[in-house]
Each structure stands twice: as structure tokens, then as C-alpha cells.
Image 1 (cartoon, rainbow, N blue to C red):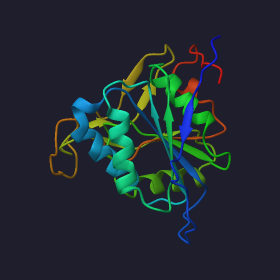
Image 2: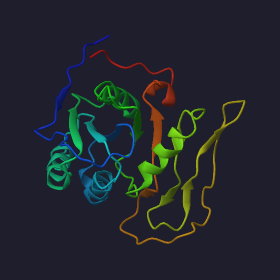
Image 3: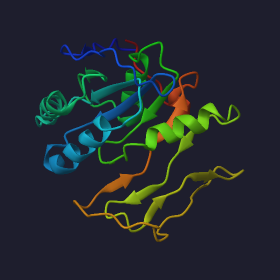
Image 4: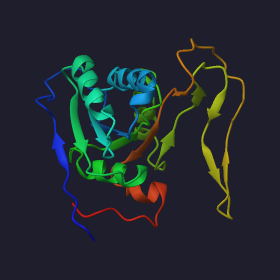
Length: 219
């Protein structure tokens, strides 16, 4: 298998000491690829991720070899809005390896102290307290291996997903799609927003969370 050269940088953005600790370290992973045409959505998502109020928090922005300047845009926006008590890492891949592989590569670059990883797409807008709710639930339920929160449309008027059920025949069924949401939110643009995200323990293998048949390039 071809050896992969990965450029990882924190650009001086490290974690400072902070007395606010809610639980174990969580690593957020968000993947980007040629998203500059939707930079309004991307910027809202970046702000949402950076505004998560859970601590301690590490965020890895991984780029799938973008050529449109979107990775540079994301780096500039993160530097502008990132809190000082959050560790931020930028991961640049030499080409587009796809969503699953990019997440897996970022997974290998997480802090070894992280207990959970949170996968947040860059067209999602998480609510500030959503990550803490998910961590609190997992910490109190050791028999749960992964969790997803309620995903709404951008207007907040309908449910996009309240989880996915897999049948014995490996068919998938999305719970709650198009169900009217309990609370309406201000529309920013047409995309998807979420009240939380996907959260799984670091002891899990990320690739099996998506497609077990996929293999990750050696680093």
C-alpha cells in the first residue's frame, strides 16, 4: 500500500490551562473538501464547533486535498474565532481519500488522552451544550458504544434524523425523518443543522463505524 505523507500542524494553537472541566477529553473531527462555494455554511459550522462549551476539547480539521482555497479559509477563520482553552489541529491530506479514510487518519492523530471522538460534518451547526449532553449520557451508560443526537433541518422546523436502525437483513431505517420539530429556529441558509453529533469511544475502530471493508492508507 502506498505510503501517505500527512501534514499536521497546530500553528501555535495549543490548549491553555482552564479550571472548567466537564469530563474526559473529547476529540472533535471535521472533514473538508473543496467547500469554498458554500463558505457561508462552512463558517457557521466552524463557529458552532468552536462554540461548543464542553471542556477539555480537542478539534481536528482534516482536509481531503482541497484545491479551491477552502482549507486556507477554514484555517484563517479558526484562528480568528478559536477559544484559547481549546486545542486545534489542522491536517492536510495530499489528495481526496474520501470521508471515511479522512476520519480514520484524523483518528490516529488525536491526543492519546482522548476518551471519545465526535464526528461533525462541516455542514452541521451543533448547539453549544450538545456535546456535554452526549458525553454525560455515555459516561452514565457503559453499555452504549455510540450515540447520535437529534438532527434538524437548518430552519429547525423538521427532523432530518433521530438515529438509524439496522435490521437483521442490514437494511437501514432513519428514525424521525420529516417529523415536525418542537422548536423553530432562525433560518440562515439551506443546509443541515444538528442539536448534537455522533460520538463514539476511542476504543472503537472508526472505520468499522462506517464501512468495515475500507482500508486506511499507512502513515
